Image 1 (cartoon, rainbow, N blue to C red):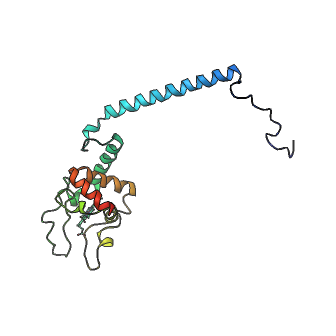
Image 2: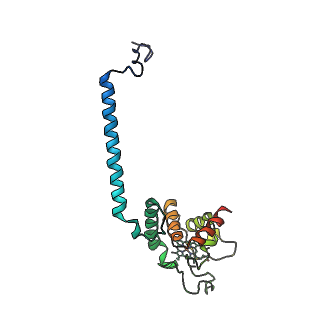
Image 3: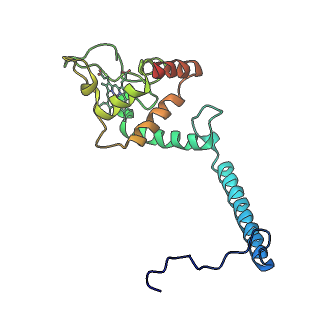
Amino acid sequence: MAGRKKGRHRPRRPARGRRPVKARRVRSRWLWWTGTACLVAATGALIFVVASGPEDLPVESGKGPEEGSEIAAGQTLYSEHCASCHGADLAGQPNWKRRLADGRYPAPPHDETGHTWHHGDEYLFAVTKRGGQATAPPGFLSGMPGFDETLSDAEIWSILDFIKSRWPPEIVNQQRRASSR
Ligand code: HEC
């Protein structure tokens, strides 16, 4: 046996189509079970999607259920980490355009009345991850904390998706153009 190459003397498999009847039957039974399992899984997924009701979520219509659930996760994270400054309704802090005594600005709204949508995705992500100071021009004092330590990249994107889900379609389109610039 030593040194004998594997498979060299293996008997040839019967040519296709001439397979023993038993093997063919096993194969078709296997196919039947796989097909049934897929059908059961698909029905289950459909029931789940219908029962969990993506219409409960604050998403604009036309979004798939998967995207909807990410937006719901983003909303939860937003209320935990962002709402204290940017407002639960995304309206920002009062007089957000007026500089405070400490040289910083209040938190701006994230809805269509603010300027979040003026910026492309890359910038919004960077500001959230690294904070306002890291992305600001020299000499500018920013009150926006970075969330690098607290949130994963995927969590940051889901929060941004939630914010976007609150914008009217024309604002969504304008921000998309800003992102592709
Ligand atoms: C402690 C208050 C505070 C918290 C909490 C906070 N922010 Fe901010 N955020 C600010 C302030 C203040 C600014 C304005 C930054 C500036 O003047 O540089 C800002 C600016 C931003 C901007 C830039 C907007 C623009 O138009 O330039 C984004 C994006 C942003 N925040 C996202 C978030 C997200 C997402 C969260 C939650 C994960 C969050 N912020 C949590 C205070 C906060």
